Image 1: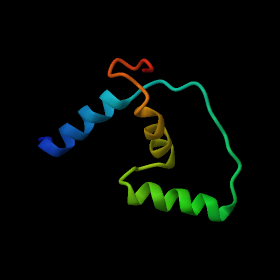
Image 2: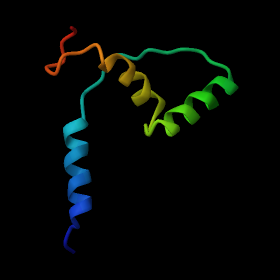
Image 3: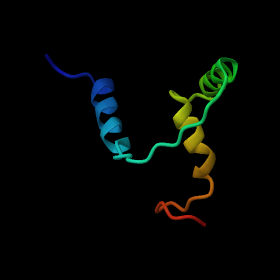
Length: 68
């Protein structure tokens, strides 16, 4: 079965984005707050709340991953 361009692109993007993360930050929130985080992440086009939160600090980084 031949791969479609879309499935090939998705696989390539997944490999590029894969970074070994070994630190976890936890925050306790209410059920309402969790739902609001998830709704806001979806509205902004993020697949997860974690991705949305990471984007908040992305503006402070240089292209090579170091801080400004």
